[in-house]
Image (cartoon, rainbow, N blue to C red):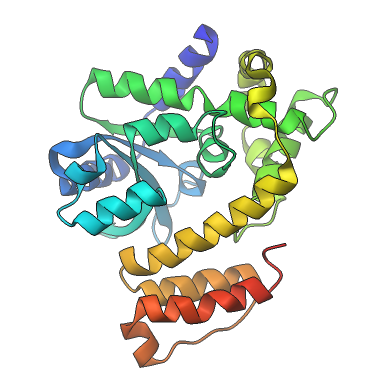
Length: 290
């Protein structure tokens, strides 16, 4: 695991646009001393242009209760992690997810069937703000678990003799099938093709750690798909309350997932939780969950 940990640590340290670092610091400041680290990930990490895009961050906190002034937000984050919030700074827009250090470690590892976190952090990310060196070490440790978990889980469903890049692509395709994602499963192929050298470097150390996982990382992908999509629906309903313009957000997500053209009335926009309850059956009937 030492070689993989060094690869992860080096990647997390790579520089980012100063505006990204400034936004990360502002996100951390919004949650005070509970903030431990902020990671930048996703398509905006790979793209040069940031204007007009939605940047993606994870805020890692020491404790949910310490991170929020409102108890219900802490309870929601603990019950169905993560909470997701919008954020804007200057001419850039973002959304950020909140996880505790304990949940971030757990959700990157083989003890969870949910692909949501380990599928994302098996991809490149950057540690763009950190409270101290202890927090940095915990992030490196957690992220180092993601790629082995992904590969070990994938080996239970795909041939083990695939070439490294093809195995990565097949593994990501499986994870895209286990969530409600606006992107098609071919997106995983594009992720690997954008930086094949990175995935070749990571493959040997990650595969060695994956084989050490043994059966802990296995399990039925059909069960993952059902549970993952239902969990996505629950998170989407929760986001209607935590996201500014929550009703618009849930309608936008459903339109992208289901190919619909839902337009909300002024009343629906003012009552996001009721609107979520009204709209989610449309998503269930759309065939996106199957």
